[in-house]
Image 1 (spheres, rainbow, N blue to C red):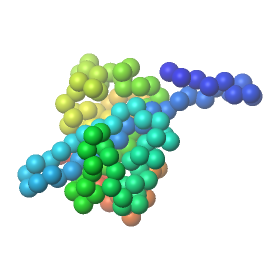
Image 2: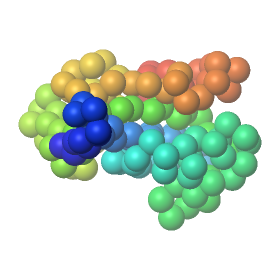
Image 3: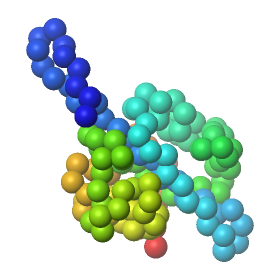
Image 4: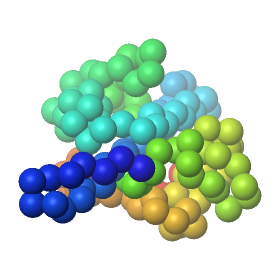
Amino acid sequence: MFFANLGNKKLVTMKYYHVFIQSLEKEGLWRQGISFDNSKEDMIESIISPFNENKHFKFGERLVDLKKINRVIVFESEIPTSEIVLPNGETPHKAEMTFLIHSFCEGEVKGVRECTSEFIPQHKSNSKTDCNIG
């Protein structure tokens, strides 16, 4: 965990942001991915702002086609994913995606919370930001 000592001696905890994206590549073929351990600034600059402005952006090594995005969910944690343990004992990097997102969305992982509405406006969200990835 990272702490910053400010002049007034208050400690500030660094937060980590994790962005899940689901897209329909072609009929019946879903692509899912998650970007782990982003700083707030990097997440906003590289994913959230372009998404909110209807601009294409890279997610991992792929250019995202905005028309194909089905779901975007943002999570926040106070520890990096290397220190997070899921209910089944796995780390997020090794977990099956549906189980991982379900665990995060349902609050089953201590210190992780869903915070999509803080970054994506209501008119953009609708069903694209709910935690039901079915």
